[in-house]
Length: 216
Image (cartoon, rainbow, N blue to C red; front, side, top):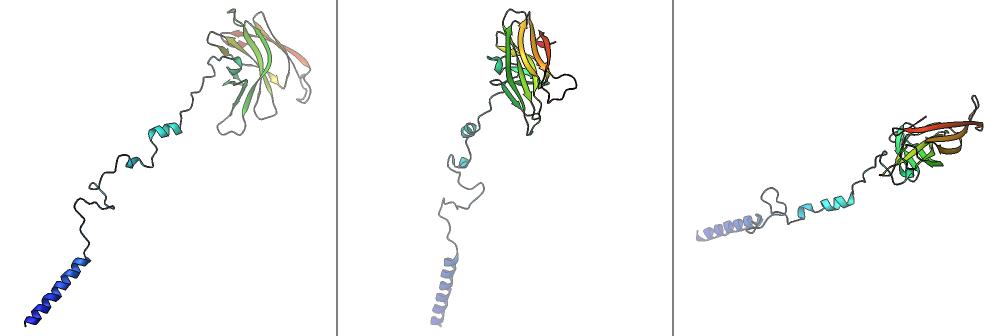
C-alpha cells in the first residue's frame, strides 16, 4: 500500500513538472515585447519617428521656390529685355528673343525676335531719347510677320509699347524718327502677287506714340 502511494505521488509530480516546462516563460519585470503595440509600448527614442522622412529643412533645400515672374509691362534695364504687345498678346523679350506656347502642351512655339532697323529720338515729347525698331514673329508655319515697336525711356528703365503690323514676309528698308514720328520704310508685294514673289512695292508708315500706345 505504502509503495503504491509513493509511486502515485511520483507520477503526479512528473506530470506537474512537464506542464511547467511546456508553459511559456513569464517576461521579466519591466521587459516589453518587441511585438507589443498600443498605448503600453515603450516610446521611441527622440528622432526615431522621423527616420526615413525628410526634414522641413531638407525638403526646402530639395525644392527651392521658383523665382517670381516679371510682368511684361515692367520697366527693363535694356529695351531688348522689355515687354511688348505683339500679335495681340503681351510678351517679354530676353536678349531680344521670346518663345511662348500658343496653348498649354502645344508642340509649336510663337517666337518673337528683335530684328533691328533701330531709330533713336524723342517719341513722347519729354525731351528724352527713345528707340524704335522692328521685331519678327513666327508661329510654326511659313509666315514671318514684321512689327514696328517702340521703347520709351523712363526713370525706371525702358517701357515697351504695342507693335504695329507691317505684313507677312515684307522686306524692311529704313527706319527714322522725324519730328516725334517713327517713320518705317519697307517693300511689300503688289496686289494679286503670290507670296513667292519678291516684295517690290515701296511703303512708308508714319507712327506716333499717344498715351503710351503706338498708333498710325
